[in-house]
Image (cartoon, rainbow, N blue to C red):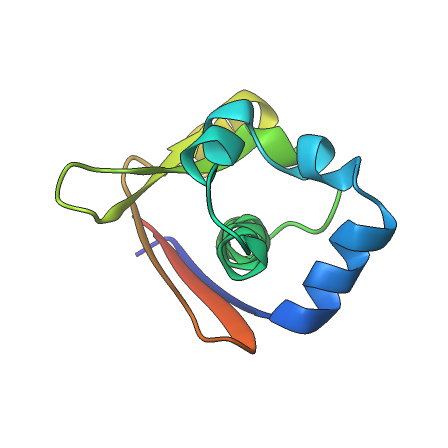
Length: 121
């Protein structure tokens, strides 16, 4: 294992942030991620979990905020329903420099808390 990261996000706080700054949806998340959540009456917990993935990925790479763009990391759902981590741009360059060839991601959320764990191998 080359790195591991974990992050937790308060769902209500994240929801309020998105309400105050609606433009953050497009700044933080890819269009594919936003499309995958269309039709939900409340997507705050799912978005908070996806944000936690970005933070956990930074931690797994040993870098801080600003090391790569938020769109450089995203989640897609596999046919099994499991999340799959997509890494591109500067995040991919950093991963390659660290010798990362495989990612594992686990995300979960309740009504109050969203969490993500990312392992870089």
